[in-house]
Length: 216
Image (cartoon, rainbow, N blue to C red; front, side):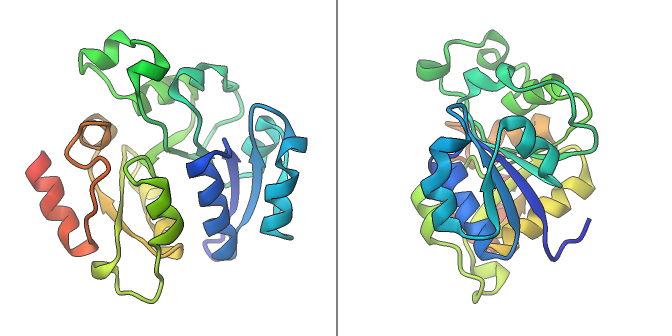
């Protein structure tokens, strides 16, 4: 994978997916964006993003990406195709909100995490939980590549594949944030979920590991 210019497929073009697309293109990466309503509904966003962006179907975004960024309401994850994910680095930015998603017993009982459910649905994918703990307005405005990593706002990551986490961490640094490694999906995913100690909190790179240790 050429780390200098990544191909990123984006599934979901709402507040998080759309702002992520803007940041990825600004950092020099190429994106294909998709949503549930069809590529033609993304013309305005693609025009804004310029030559390094295009719109496609979910399958087009999946096949295009070295990295695939998923930002859909959690209750819709089962609508994603189950094939074609082998060795794909998949960023899961989804969150479980029972009022929106309905009750999911395994999550309510703390027996698993939403990212582990996604991993079961996407066999072969290298799942990294990220971009779900940051408010979309902060994602849009707080990245600053001129700052040293310890002074940047943190975007937390969790995953069971260390190489995949490193790839996502580099992408986070490319867009002006610092990556905070929260551990495996089973532990970090719990800390990063809504109401967890890392969710919707502002930490600098220098504060990240202290925050993770305090939440463990």
